[in-house]
Image (cartoon, rainbow over all chains, first blue to last red):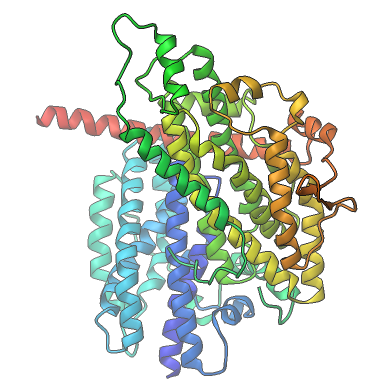
Length: 241
Length: 354
């Protein structure tokens, strides 16, 4: 049971931190249509986070609901991958992060939709449709920016180079999990290579592979993100909102 | 969409006004169905035809001739409305990262997203009058067109998100419901859609305040403080008193505007009093009382000198809001250029292929 709790919590935390970062873009997007799109994707991620955290709380059986898990844990108790907690950077960096995340979440949720656990299967079936849209949206921007102007090409390549090392953590083998992340790597590589080619971007060499998020050892950024997210909730212990 | 998962509070606001929006929508359909001449007769004066359409409560459409001043008035009004939606994303967006529950975070994100959507279709409505969105955005960024002054006040606590929903969106709806019957068709149709969503937003704000007002003593104090700060600026949203309003008479004659600033303000006050009682919050006006003769509440006017100062640029957040918008626009320039370059490359490739 604890294995299933850890797995569900990790996916919920990925989605929650992604939503929190995307929410930072509100009213700052490069064009108005993109403000609508980024909010849409943030809402999808937040919706998935709520379903996953609620289920994780039930699996744990200690009476923690989605808000207790989101607002009353410290950074060492969060299980999200490092990729999602990295600061937004410029729009190219945000799209690089979203593209690589969606290229992982789509095969993950697709596999999950066929897993033996009914609740996770239902969440996977709902979230995979949303991930397909996220992947589509981010791919289009990676191509536009990669194959746009000289400046956008330089920025997009730079973003991909910076973010790439953080993708390895996503595929750390876990044979006991409902979906072993290691089995998703081939799908991810195929999608990423095709989009990079079309975007005239170079796939970075593999090497440095930072990790630790799944064990609660994060970058320096997460604690600040949580401080902001949790400040009001923690200032009023036990209050209803 | 996620997050809008709560039952509306009993006796919540929005019901009566939403009925008026639906009636306006029905009237719009009837006007469209009524036999229309489709244009002036060959020997008929354009201006006479325009006056005829307005008199008959028909809609002016983009293809129709219209007086230049009518066109300009509409462009100014619709653009200011669109700008207000876009700038209005900032004060509420300020609380997305700190929303106190995941449900509230989802509702707030969806609301701010709706505002971006309203901005988009209001700019589209303005474009039917022969001006481009880029031109209008430029006018906003250069400070040559205004947005609603209410957004120059800060959101200091979470309760401000509730107060904006209840009071600011409430005032906006009272202002906008009559615009659903505006003589210019594209604007009237856009307003019907906007009003329906705004009424939902107002209910959400009311619900936030209701929860706070029935929560801990700290939460209730937070709610009262927000109402204290937002009440008079919300009254000022209806504009200067009728005697000082420069655009009103002509707009009334053209059926762009249907009620005077003071009539709408009174309507808003009358609507809020009962809702405040249900909330258990106090409207910060010691002179607020029922006037049996007028069948309305007497109330204290907002500080119109303050309104003029804020309009002129000296509100608490004017500089911050404009700086934020300019920065987002400037920092997005390389992205928009890349998208245009990419589209141009694709077009030329398709032409070569064809």
